[in-house]
Length: 100
Image 1 (tube, rainbow, N blue to C red):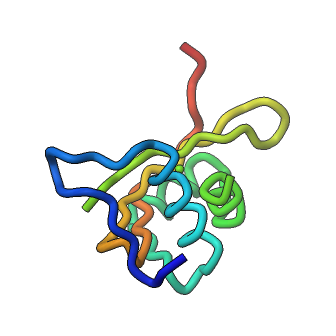
Image 2 (image 1 turned 30 degrees about the vertical axis):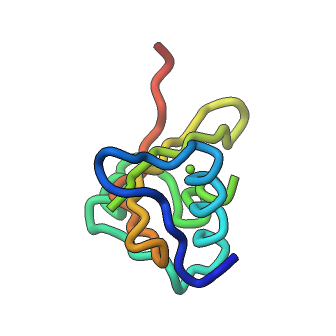
């Protein structure tokens, strides 16, 4: 993939979900491209989750998305992130997904 990923024009031309997911997975494959909000660290501590847990979820979701993936049995974790200029990920928060 190229260094910079075009994801559409905010807010009127959102990228297809599969394209956004592909960019997120590509960026998440290199931890040097990921920034973590203090809130994400706080929520991980509250939920007994680790950066490794969040990366596992991200590698399996200006555009923001929430990627959800089951870990520790069947319980799902959500990682909310922003793709910045198609080059970096900013992890806003990490949380357990409560069943509906």
